[in-house]
Length: 371
Image (cartoon, rainbow, N blue to C red; front, side, top):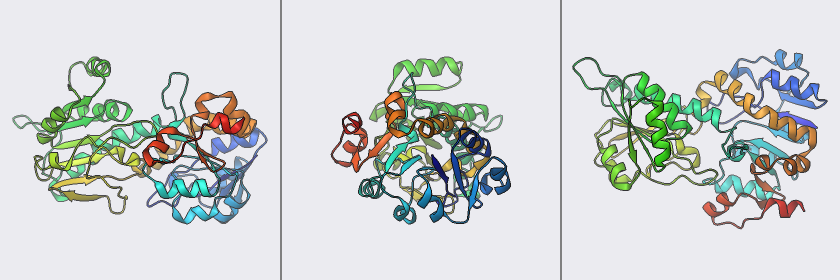
């Protein structure tokens, strides 16, 4: 198979879809890998490293997209990349289609086979390709929040851990999954007063055990969320419904009771955000205020630490990329139901039900299309 590795063009996105080691694994398996010139520089991988791994360097993204049968990326294609996609091409990347009608329409119109990292499952039913970036984003959320709580950054002027005689900042984390747990690790480590809200009581018990009662836990309800965020200095949105739009759990009306200069970091922004006032921002223009509350809603947070993120991502994605390349798309998804769960678009049809429900589109079962 011919595999293409284009350079990411999303605002301040420095990750790359494959490390040189990943390219080496694919070329050793007999595949041809086309790498766009300087695709890996943002992550610290020079062109020569890819050449040494057996890749063929090409000068433009058009060359990569034109020739490759499978495109391996990090972030979803943006508007300038839509015309490069072609019928039958396999696109292996994060897609986050639920809130993105424009990209969904482009994939369906061009009949692209879109395999989304974020909906692939493993035997335990977890999301192995979403997990590494959720770990990065969760840990980053606290350091970003601590930065923006500083007065010169627009916040309340509060030190996250406080000092003797002065209370620590109050951090409320909505969602106790991978993002929420990793955020809590850093917040607790920095000495913050941490509360995690989740609708799964068993998960709250697990978190209480994990953190040895160093955090507070709350069962999710509109009343408890409103009460908690009204006292918070830093609010972390960490809710995920796989493939679907995130539920809007923090309303604008709730934010009216939050102190001016408090900070919201909505990590769920890729799926539309779990705060009503969330809209995507970029690393070059990351924040805005609503009701006096500073919002940080960058849709590619791990892009700020691309070297760490690229290694972590390739560790998870490479086995699936190899399976798709070695077996071909149809055989690969027929032999692996978890990989099949990653297929969001195929042959001009929307094949992930949660996305179809979020957008009010027609859903088509992948197994029926393949049969």
